[in-house]
Length: 239
Image 1 (cartoon, rainbow, N blue to C red):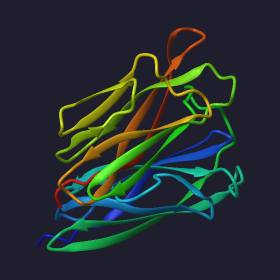
Image 2: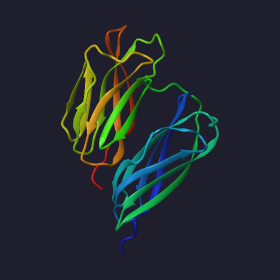
Image 3: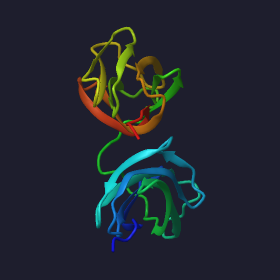
Image 4: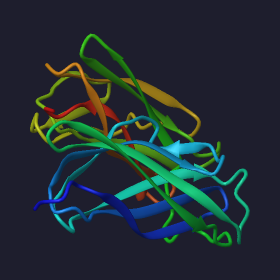
């Protein structure tokens, strides 16, 4: 007899950069019935402020028996002491004869601070949703005097989408189903500056968080610089 889906946590990787704590953990369905359309709807680590995902839900996938997915989250280092354990709690939903919820808990150890393996662009993206229109503003959080300017914005999408806004000096490209990209030859976003007007529309009125990347251009070295990676709300897939 088939057993209902049961989602549990697996291995966890924790990175402490000294500025934030990055947690990556696997979740596995140990039931024999498939858990379809698994979404993450919440993540906490002790009392630390969550930096990413900024918004939920985040799509994990469909988990068959012994099928696994990966969940990543980033938290402020404030309130997290190296060498101490803190409770990581993940909440979500899945489909199995209806929409059901799950909660999984796991204690994780905070390691000593160490630089991230590769440089990251200090940056973030905000979104405003109104009347099935998603409008994005890009922020370059590099300090004044940095030579890293933002030259491109790539957004993963999972629903039919039309590009309806592009800032002056930028160009857009998209296959209208899986990605939207904007790039600029010389209207780059300087450190401590922001630029809005990156706009898309979709027939769906719902959102989910999808991945994006911000690509920098080093004006001193005259070549590509570090990339900023995170998630932001975009049109949701069919549910």
